[in-house]
Image (tube, rainbow, N blue to C red; front, side, top):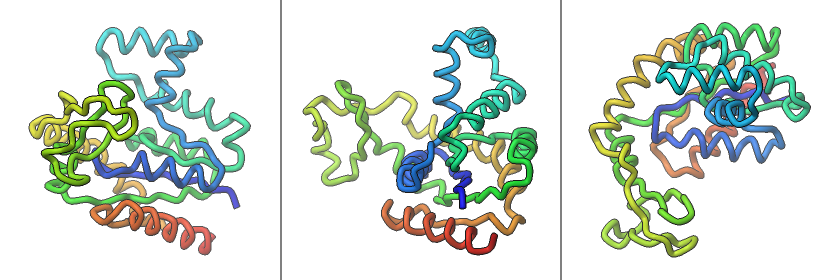
Length: 218
């Protein structure tokens, strides 16, 4: 049975990493609206031009444009055997549109839950390599020694948007915008919650178990 999975979670919960891993293990694409927006702008397609102009004006890309991107992506050959969604839907309008795109096909939805204070701690401790772009946690070992990238030896620095103030603001926006989406799905039999405060390997195991339990009910 094709895997159709939506992973929800706040900034710092690790949903992107987990979504990519489960997509790879199931041999399906991870579909991220962020990636699609960048690809559309680069492609120079009519929709991409519209999106580029919208972003250049500092405006949010409309739900209609985002849904159009997702519609195109879901029609690609590699998505016919399943997919993992990351970053879509972000609004109830987009969630309703996704139901229409799936035409009754069941969608497994997993929410990764992590307390806000743990998310702040994680993001504050996140470092990125200036040379190769690898992201690591300063808490993997002695934070005082987390200055050199183990991949290439480059210098590890904190991103400007990983300050505590920025992180807390992003969390406020996430809960304001995403809570209605969670409410849209949480009463469905295909909805599951997993504890994202444990080790990443345990989070993955919980997501895999959640997906298996949804599949068993179909």
